[in-house]
Image (cartoon, rainbow, N blue to C red; front, side, top):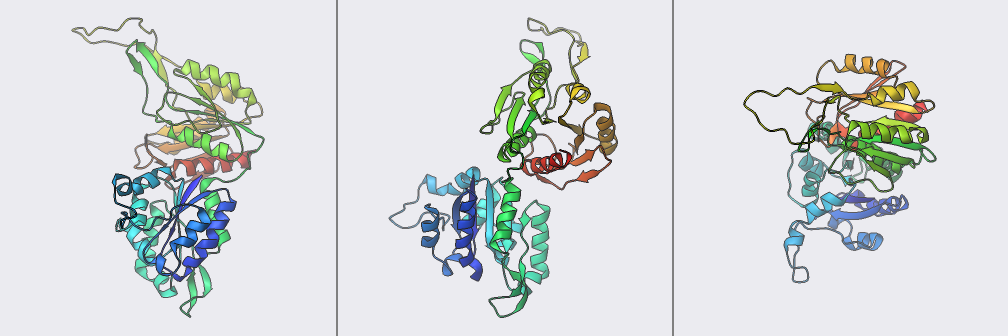
Length: 398
């Protein structure tokens, strides 16, 4: 996995050198991005020697040795697309303010705006700067947007004052990185079956019924489970997503095909997570020839598709069973009813009309409903982070 480490202009910048080593021990590929102010405290050469990679210090190439070109002009987009995480340590009050207000004045700030990867900031500054209302408002804004904050420690500061503002210990920062990236092996020896994406039910050779599912939540679950050591079986309806590495991928199209694939492999699974948006209805008859437009209206007779989740609930045996509920109203009531009706151990429910929780979004806002009556609401998180929270609960059930 690849992360970008942003180093900003504070006296704690020297600690980032050791942080690079700790991140490498986690088998992470680290690329360092430095602000101009950071270079007043530590040189790019130090990080280049530690990482064996180019250290990005400018938005655009400068000097005859590195002429500006199209590649350098869009480098921030290339880096944004290939990283799994952006970590900024130390994060000064200045950089927090720029992040919070969307100011893209240098490479690091532009990278922050361009990436869809999770973001962690580890603030470090004078105690008065940390406690200033402007800094605290900026931190609150970033938290609300899903940025992870490793709070500074308290103690004697470089400025001679005592209080909060000292960069958190490297181990605390690395622990947050592990948590966000799901760098755990707690599913080693387990098999997780995940369904993802929509199904398509044919009307005729050129038309079908489907839904708006992108498959992103299911694929995030498959990737998260794989990173945590599980053997993963991914049964997927049609999507445009890249299959996570190392999973046993079974492409399907219709609800019948998904049912057959799940039934064939369910006995292997310790955990079954039904994240797919399986069509509830299909045409009672699929026409072999294209239906032609006529003068009058056209009526389609629909019939229910197999209820795969309910079938698993009756036959699941030793497997932990997790279902999903995409709702537009009465989310809690519908989720609790589905939990009882389907025989699942947990239902993950969301209101798809909420901003950041709907179809094709990179984030989600869900509540986990468990058999013992617990309801666990989660804030807006990336779908990968939601996936890890779900797997945390699954481990508890196991």
